[in-house]
Image (cartoon, rainbow, N blue to C red; front, side, top):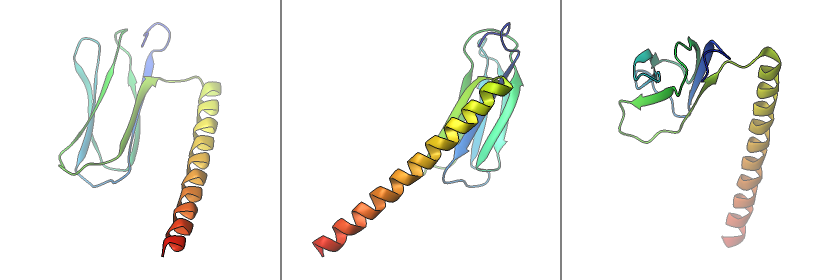
Length: 117
């Protein structure tokens, strides 16, 4: 991320099988300094942070549980208001299309199960 282009970054974490006091997230700057450390207490977290140095920032998500979990994380510069609307609209559209696909697959599997029985 370039601090001259965008002085603020943002990260988001979404946990599908959320359990309290299990997950944490931290941001590491290009100088390997931890700038944010946060316990995740809800299934979706979004937080802004200051970009102090230009370079690659790391989002590290940790779990204290040994069970496998589905986690999605993203980090990047804070988008402009116009771009944020486009991103929000496109992510909503992708979610709707994905849910529709899951419904179609579920119906297909149920029909195939009935035919085999």
